[in-house]
Length: 130
Image (cartoon, rainbow, N blue to C red; front, side, top):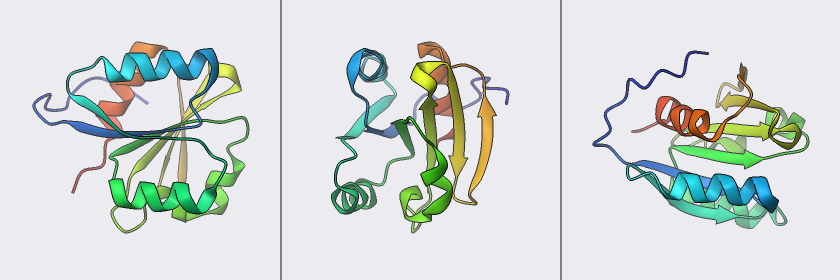
């Protein structure tokens, strides 16, 4: 998937972080929060599905960045995709060696190995706005 930046940078992209822990999670959080046209609207752990789902539905992120060990759960439960408004989920996998884009359909699109700047470009490109 070509992540060329074709979006309007005057629009703020609302991002929710899920399970972004450890060194990689801190790197993602620091870089995403340093970009002026991207706002972190939620920073959640995945220890309580009900709470996480409620917060995601209330905050209406354009994109969710989720640090995952196993992405199969994304295909099993469409509630994770903020169904009433739609949002994209970028899964960072395999300790940052792979990433994938999930959308409400659900449909998985393989992405290039994630670099921090590549992640920022992907956030801008896949943001689902009303």
